Amino acid sequence: MTTFDNNKNIRFEIVDTYSRWTALSATRSGSPLKSRDDIYSLLEGVDFKTILVSDSNITKTEFNQWHEKTAKSMNVIRPEMQIGWTTKIINVYLKTMVYVGQFGCSDLLRHIHPPIDKGLLDGLKEKFKDDSFISQTINFKTLIKDIKSYEDYAKIIATLELIAIKEKCLLIEVEQFWQGTKFRTQNGR
Image (cartoon, rainbow, N blue to C red):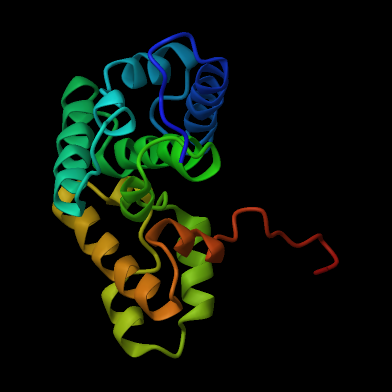
């Protein structure tokens, strides 16, 4: 993974800017807040450097505590952004910074969460339709707006962790089942 240099690091700045834009773009469909000012203001209040710029590795517990605290604080600042939306913004930003951009310690890569949305749940439903445990654990009809508490969110992540183990991949790589770009034309093709 790339480490952050306290001097001006152009690559870090470019990936950070792009990560913020991807987080903004993730709010385009259904989010109560969609404006650049609103989303970027929320992101400005997040201390990403705590987990991205560290001389030591981060444990799963430390990451999950940071994640929960951050999602809840974003929700307090903008209550219309329920936990489903605050976690999605955080997760999209981190997917871009850590998984794509390769910033942060190597342990961070093992802990970041996939963004939860209909595209991911649709893909999981298709892939695991015959797995009764997963089908009973995840409500595939859940919408982002339905995830109102961090406890509800954490239950979904716990199931995704089991899927990651089953599929022998990183938790973020459960994203491989995302079907957000899958669509059918009017002719069904």
